[in-house]
Each structure stands twice: as C-alpha cells, then as structure tokens.
Length: 171
Image: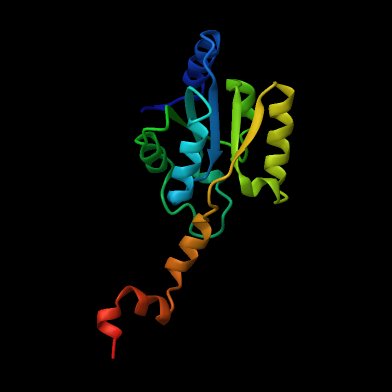
C-alpha cells in the first residue's frame, strides 16, 4: 500500500466514510518495527475496513540520542508493505492531534500500555478524538518496546552473546 500525503488520506477517509466504511488510524514512531506493532496493526484492522498508520517524522521522534534508528521514509515503506495496513502517512508533528482533526477517522487505536501510562501527547490526542467523535480503542496484544530492543542491541552483555552463540561458548 502506498505512502500518502495528509491531504490524500483525508480525501480517502471522507470518501470511505460516505460509503459507510469504518476507517481506523494507528499512530506512533514504529522505530524499530517489531512483532508487537504487527499484532497491534492486525488487531486494529480486525475492527475496521481501512487502517491507516501515521509514522512520526524523524525530527519529532523524542526517544533519545541516536533515534530514530530507521528514517521516516524507510519506516513508512516497511509499514506500507504490511497487508493489514491500507496506507501510511508521515506525520510531521509530535502528536497526532492535527492529523486526527484533518482526517477524522472513525476509530483511533493505541496499545494497551496507554491505559496505564501518563502520556501528555496521548491525553491531548484523546481529547481531540473525542471532540471530533472519533472513538478511541485499545488493542490488547503483548506489549513490546522498540526502545528496550534498541537498548539491548546497543549494550550486549556477555550472557546475551553466550545465549546467541552457544556453540562457541560451551564447555
């Protein structure tokens, strides 16, 4: 599926909703893509006819030094290749508030971790969603963390290396 502009996604969403289709939106950094993201997209797609994913633009990724690991165009291309995803847009903002206002999907999906964490961006996104009659739903898939995976890859311990290459370190 293609990577769209915000204007293109807004038009597709409007046309789809006029045809009584349910349009969903997932938003995030998705750096690096892992099985938790895949399951999140699949669970979201099971609840809508079209699923769009917005990828946070590189300059707005606030995950620490050296992030993003994978640049926005590549993250968008990877996600657009998934069969559960109808299209992707790169969001040049810290949150999805403007995007929610512009495209007005039927449903906005976040993972279950957003039920318990205090995230200012999500709080404002939720407020925007409610003001435009966009239902916020959570998927309940196993929570994974790109940040934890990247951290582990950057600081491999001897124990981890031994578990990866047991034939070298046995006996």
